Image 1 (cartoon, rainbow, N blue to C red):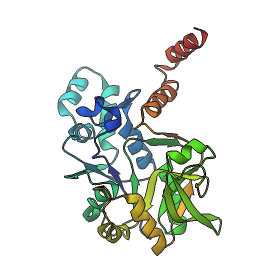
Image 2: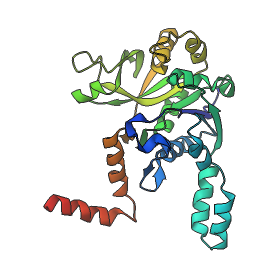
Image 3: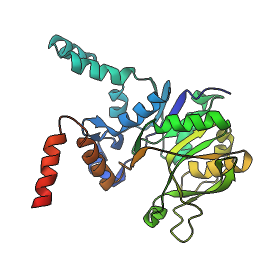
Image 4: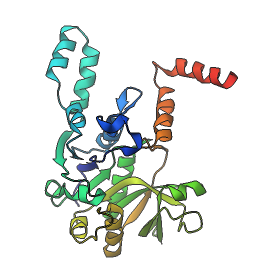
Length: 289
């Protein structure tokens, strides 16, 4: 069984939920305290042992590409100024992994984006994560998913257990059955609503996939001009064992939504040594007002 060494991050979308901010700046680059959203995603991948991160980008994502590259002018200025800590900080970003960029020439859905990485993936298993939400956990979500893959040698979808009826209108839910201590996925039902949810396991945007997915994507029917990875994975589940990985010890941030983005900044601002005390004082002030 081959090791999971690569991850694909579809990042070609327009980020319309954050217009006008995302008119010229990628949504993945919006900061959570002092790091862009995408860095939190990549850090979780690197912790899991991912060596190559493949970004599927578009013409308006140059800032994302530049962020993970060296900036010699800035680095030299920091070194000359004796700002060694800041120099090392930005160098670490570029050195986390090998970064590869593939242009998705037209936005035609998540499956279309993943398919753009086909030649780079070859015959290896790979992770798929998205660039506008992230999961903080110990161990990382990617680590938990890869462990599940290593135990099953089968595709994996990340899920969280939730009994909140409102979540059934936001996430896809897995339908399946228990099999040897694991939950085998039969299909994923998108936003089923509280009356039709097939389980209490909601998908939260991460997969370990095998190259078997690419022929399926090639045969996918088009819907509203797009090809959906969730539909391709449903077909895959009919062809071979496919399991849910219920994440543990995690916090999920949908930073692609306005509230999720604000919540992430508050939570991580309360953990950051430079902002914690001032933010606590401000929250107390609001509470007492």
